[in-house]
Every structure is written in structure tokens, then in C-alpha cells.
Length: 348
Image (cartoon, helix red, strand yellow):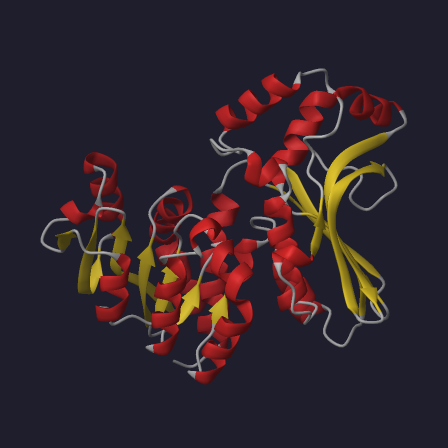
């Protein structure tokens, strides 16, 4: 089998980007045998510079350089100090642009949104687990991708490695989705379970930060913004309902008392921050709020590092999918899943 080479440029070598590069290195032989694909990196960018070589970069050397010096700008021969992602996306000759930079809703999802716009306009497919551009600019980016005949994939933006979006977009084709219930945020369930087991709020938050599942600023997760953002993506992409963050009736978990959490557990219920979309005459009603889920609820038995989604449909019944995500690897692997979706179904 003759291998088909796919050229990848990646922006962001943090938690997800670093794991993704390692994954491609580890899977190279298997991807060639199973799919006839040769995935190569032609560019990699971090906050201090870039590595760029149209002939291909060594993924292991990308990681060794990043780990030893803190930046891929020190990559032998191909390293370029001070070169930004915007510089690279305008210059690189690649098939797929992977946008793996951190979420930055506060600043309008920059610079990720500008890079994605340029990549799509230049005829590159785009893969991203970054929620920011999809939450704020889904309709625009969807239209831009269609205009230029390229794909936009973002399965990692909702519930980590869980194929929550693909289930709704593909496996439920032809159905009317009456309701979605999802627990797409891992850390709130982790914290609530710790408190259920007798841990104090402060201790639970400290443990969540130590585990690496809670950011230094916990408001994004604890106040329900992350869950709301993922619900907005589901609404736009799966339900075809043009929604924005302000359309979500949002309540976080910070107002819950330890007494309430313990009493619900004694009743056989687990507290979870539930994202809900309910079909109405005018579209969908969207909400995020803590809910006490009984054990017979499809999502009522989620563990501390599990996320899940339930679709209620008119013709396919009720479908639930759950993922246990002990490390960020499944979230990073969504970029590979999206790349395979594009390369196996799309002719470049």
C-alpha cells in the first residue's frame, strides 16, 4: 500500500498539543498499515517561536527540544525564534491546521480565531479542541469552511475524548432530538464526589488543582461557564440552533452546601452539573445547573473522572455515552480522530 502523506501544522504545544505530537509519533507505523497514511508535521508553534520545515519535522525531536529548552524555536535548523502562529499560518504549506492553543474567550478567542480564519481561507482543513473559536464564531467558521471546500472538525471541544458531537451529527441522522442531558465538565463531578466523601470545599479544590483537572482560576469551571460553552457548541453543531453563551440559563456549583450534597447522597443521588437542551416550539431551551441524579438516571452513576451525554430522540430511543478520562490523552487524541475523519472521507 502506498502511503498518502498528510502535512500537519500545529499551534500550541501545551497539555494537549504535546500529547498529540507524542501520539502521532507512537502511532506512525500503525496508521500507515491500517489506513495507508503518513502524517507528518511541517510546522509546530509555541508561545516563543516555531519550527518549520516543508520536508517534515521529527516529532520526537520536537518534543525533546520543547522539553529541554522550553520552546520549539530551538529546533535544530528549522527553529525560528519569535515566529508567531499568525506568521506560520500565512506561510506554511500544509493540509491540516491543528489549533491546540488554550481557550481564550476573554479576548475574543485570539489568536486562535484569526489563525483558523486564515487557514480555512487558504484551503487548509482545521482541527481544534479549542472551544473558544467554536463557541463565539461557529456560524461564521462553518460558512467559511463550506465556502473554501475544506473541513472544520472540533470533536474535542465537548466532553474530552467522548465522541459526543459525532454521535449527534452522524449516528442520529434523521432523528428529532427532543432533549440532551450532558455532564461535559469533568472537574465539577470530581469535586462534588470528594465533598460527598467528606472532603471540605477548600480541600476538594486544592486536590483538583493538584490532579491537574482544575485551572489556577477555578471560576470557569465552578461557575458553569465551561459546561455552558460546551452546551452552546452542541446546540449550534448538533441541534442546528444558533445559540450564544448568554442564551444559557447558568448556575454553577459554588452555591451548593456540603449538607445538601451529603443529604442527596444519602437519598441515593449524585450531584452533577448538568447541561440540558430541551426542544420547544421556538427552538431549544438551554440551561446549566446542579442536579441530584438518581442511580436509575442514565448519567446517575458517573464516577469522579467520568463525563457523559444522553440524547432523547423520536426514532432512535434514548442513547447514552460515557467516558472515563483519567488523563488528558483522550482529549488530545480527538485531534487524531478528526484528522482521520477528514483524510479518510475527504479528497484533498
